[in-house]
Image (cartoon, rainbow, N blue to C red):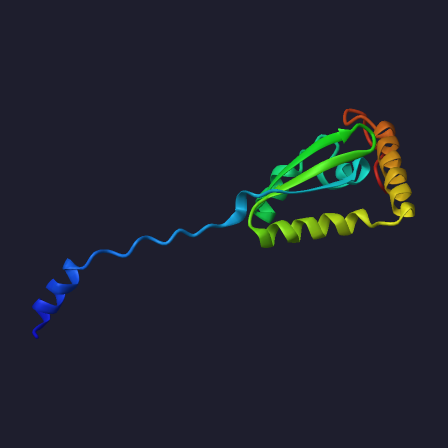
Amino acid sequence: MDTCSVLGALLRLPLPPPRARTQLWWLPVGFYVDVWLADCVFGPDQAVIPETEWKSRALLTVDIVNPGNLVEITILGQPRVQNQVKRVLLSLSSWPPEHRARVVMMEQLEESLKACAPCPQTPQCPVA
């Protein structure tokens, strides 16, 4: 058989059905953390969420379930990425209570320093 007849025979064969690849990226992973932790990680107004999504390649939603107590974090993405983001966030939630007190104290210190900061229009003392 010559090459042309082999190619002609192959072209007459029916095409195999396309394989469907199902990837379960659309199944979200959700869990609950304390509000103070979500504020520390994502900021009080959740301004850090887009940057976190970009870096982790996962979509995040943060919904307040019980004001003052719990937020629900939902992660949508590849299963490996979902597990990694969940593991990081849950490891942060295992911080001891002393760390939470330290975070609150640092926030209060930051607010008091902002309140005591001199206006930019006032001249500063020259350093000799």
